[in-house]
Length: 119
Image (cartoon, rainbow, N blue to C red; front, side):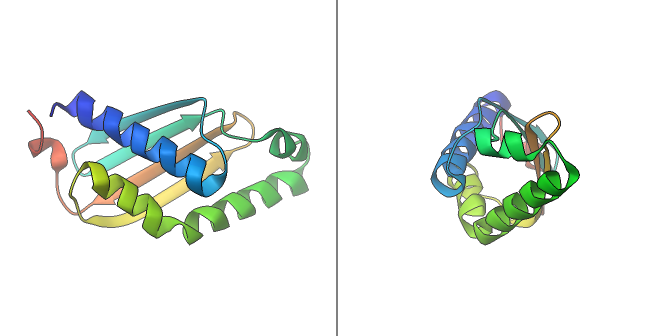
């Protein structure tokens, strides 16, 4: 597989994870592999209720806490989704949400440079 094909398959797997574990998928998703990092950028994943909550500081904090807890509780499933595409050891995973832009960024740190995996 090429780098682009792996990135595309990772995007599909992560989008499916978001739908199954978080309740809805993103409008757009982009995955980029850089050496031992996988960067995932999801756009348009906030629900209408979350968008309405995001109008004040308390709502923003609540959304971030809930989304962070949901992601932490589903971490094993997320890592399984990544491993279903490419057999790697995951060192750590980070995630953050922007209620201003409606984006989510996930960073996956691997134990090796995976640029050697593709043609």
